[in-house]
Image 1: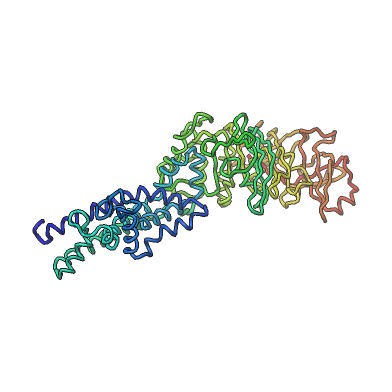
Image 2: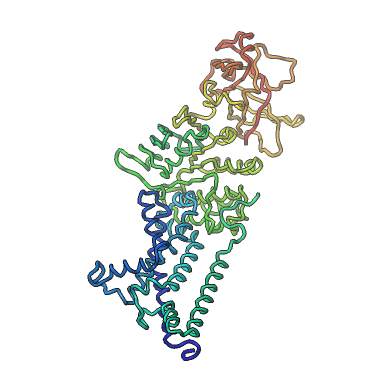
Amino acid sequence: MQGGLVSAADWAAVRLTLELAALSTGVLLVLGTPLAWALARSRASWKPLASALLALPLVLPPTVLGFYLLLLMAPSGPLGALALPFSFGGLVVGSVIYSLPFVVQPLQQAFEAIPESTLEAAATLRAGPLDRFWNIALPLARPGLLTASVLGFAHTIGEFGVVLMIGGNIPGRTRVLSIALFDHVEAGDHANAHRLAAGMVAFALTVLVALYWLNRPRRATGAGRTAP
Amino acid sequence: MIEASLRLARGEFSLAVELRLPARGVSALFGPSGCGKTTLLRALAGLERGAGRVALGDVVWQDDASGHFVPTHRRALGYVIQEAALFAHLDVRANLAFGERRAAGDGPRIPLPRVVELLGIGALLGRRTSTLSGGERQRVAIARALAAAPRLLLMDEPLAALDVARKADILPTLERLHQELALPIVYVTHAIDEVARLADHLVLLDGGRVRASGALAELLARPELPLARQDDAGVVIEARVAEHDGAYGLARIEFAGGALWVGRSERRADALGQRVRARVLARDVSVTREAATATSILNIVPVLLEAAHSDGATCLLRLACGHDAPAAGDARLLARITRRSFDTLGLRTGDRLYAQVKGVALMG
């Protein structure tokens, strides 16, 4: 395909984007699942504050987020020693923070939908806290887990503002799809812009259709009691 | 011996109980909704944290004096609730295996095939839990609890969500558990018919306090307790089938202090010598000073008036079966009569009377 419809440089951007999305989604699930579990189970006073902090990326312009992340990561900032700005690692950190609510919220909702009595029943059957989490909560939250993964992945792919602020536009390192598209438009290269844009639309649509299909309501799932 | 000394406050409600329950048989926690019976059961399981002490024989589950608290998942108990709480992502077999795999060596193991047979769920093993009926869900929930080798089975209104037919279906199964497993059961309910049928020991709860606790037959026969004021107040009598009258389809059951004729039923085993439990409602018992001879009443039992308790227009009499000085083990009857009859007959405690029993229900 290289040298065909899509240029090598654009393919590099596609590959980089997919790598970034896959890695970010992995990190998001590892961090987000226990966080969502804690939020779903907790009645502590810190819960509203934690929920609000978590929802911030939903309402803030990505550039605001990127700006503060850049300050944090700057050589003189608290995370300066990690040399994150304008690196792939920096993009991962940015994506994780940016996409966190998209992963935590579906997971939290899925965990909250599990009746307390189900977890208590597991406890009375000698399942300890970790056992209950792995063998009851996670399997029952499977639809939420799927939604969280897909949304986290797709949202990272669509990210622009945060990347621009902390990653810049370094081919092969931080030049992701959305930036490459922006470049083409800036350069008046509408043909290439169209190919990338249409590709992203097709990809997003495919992913969402797959998601809705997998999570479609099936007959009598779980809670419903059928007549005797 | 199950020991519970628990205190707990939740907003307006407070629970404060000192209880000793027998280590055998079914102990029923009975009372109106909001009396604390579910909270008490949850505290026994460790699902609710009260202050005090909980012990099952020599195993101490909670002792705040020494800072000892065993979390629920380390207690050898089974817990069955009204909603069954089956695991929706597992089929019936996997639900049963969940508890069985985790059973520690500290409880009496009942082999899974035996559990399946006892609960009659052999045909359900491959089914998804979402396809089960209410009665089936409850059977699976009980089987799952038993598979985890509990030393104590706690049941919170396990039949409350079922219709009358399902309930009648599953009650004999519970009786079988009771008879065939040496497993103490604490059973929460607000249905007196379940108490009368299943319980050996009864705890009356009201407003988070224990109103009375004792052997079922003894408590049911106490006219001063709120139980006796209910329309379906009545006693239970442990008896033995002594005689059959095939021509009239009757059986005579004998008990300490007397005997009664009851109608036989094809559905019920009543072989000679079989132990049965009979229920006699207070409203079905009347008294006479002389034994009536020309009467359609089949059961006339000589009794001694032990106590009378009046509430408004009616009077509840506590009657010891037999004309001799009553012994502790003698069966008791309750009779509800009008206060006017009480005065007209000039009844006094110690009077020798004849109880006319109009209805007796055999319960397994």
